[in-house]
Amino acid sequence: MGFVRKQPGFEPYLALIVAVGQVVLSQGASWGQRAFKEPLDAMAYVLLFVGPLAILARRKYPVTATIIALLATYAYTWLGYPLGPIYLAPVIMLFSLVTHGLRRIAWVLAAVTLAVSLAYSHAMSRPGATGLFHDLAITAFILLLMVVAELARILRERRVQQQRAVEEETRRQASEERLTMAQELHDVLAHNISLIHVQASTALHLLDDNPEHARTALATIKTASKEVLGEMRSVLNVLREGAPRSPTAGLDRLEELVERAGLDVTLKRVGSRPLPSQVERAAYRIVQESLTNAARYAPGARVTVRLEYGATQLAVRITDSGATTHAVLAEEGGGNGIPGMRERAAALGGTLTAGPSGTGFEVSALLPLPEENS
Image 1: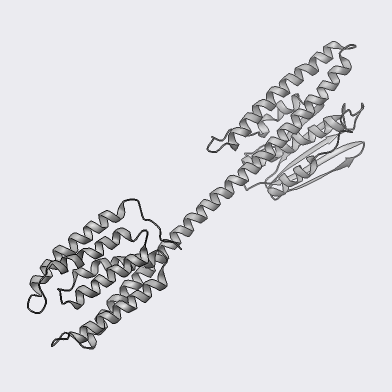
Image 2: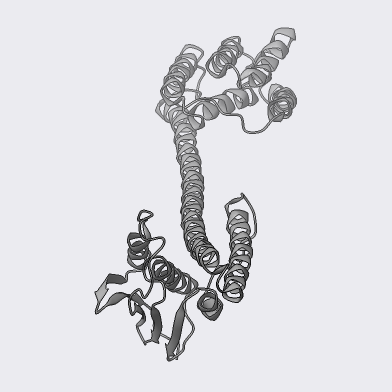
């Protein structure tokens, strides 16, 4: 892990605070330790400013800056100047190394600092200034600093991981939404283009012999083309980043779908209850795809669309009586209509079957529903 900036321009303020703190507090420490420490002189002030200057470079040269700050602290200590505030910069530097991932180097430098401190306390010992308790206090302070830094590093990494997890989940949901919208766009295009093609073929066939019926077919083409443009605009708006979600097709629009199907369709509803939006959308698309297939492969057929609203599932059944005229689009290749309907049902935990039924064809889907609130 690299050395990461906390925020632009933060180091100068921190360095200034540390510099003022070390100089001012060291002057107070000098007065308190005047009996056994050297007074502050020009060299002492130079060494007091080395640590804050090293903080300015920690962003680009973290290890080098930390070593320089520690060396200045060692020199200050061994020259006999007042102890205490001089350790503020090294504490910050070691803490930063750990929290930004340079843990091994930080622990090595902490161990060196402990060794130097213990060596100094014994080499420059005075009565009551050294001993086991003194050594343990120094060791405990350095260990506490490193443990707190490790805890801060762990918390920081957890926050980063949580943020990444949230971002990944957001991207995943966006991808799933776009995939759903792409499927919606496919279904809209497949249905309306097939309807337009059927009606155009009918209009061409009847144009000379039955112009009134041809006019009806052309009117259906106009309505279907307007519908497909509107739905395409709605779906594409959702695919655009940050666009507001437009209402999607639901069962309240089945009558409109039936009217422009170009078939003799009977719509039956058994019962009624509120449905989740995803179930409504799936049921609508299943009916839409079934009517598209009937228009393509069974022109002239009588079609029955039956919806049964149960307590735990929605039953959708579309049956046709079989073609009564030549299927002008039957030879133009198959698509993914039935597999797509099965995928929609399976995505909701439901089932879908499709196959011949008498002289015609039947599509039957069972979509699970949540329990109604009493």
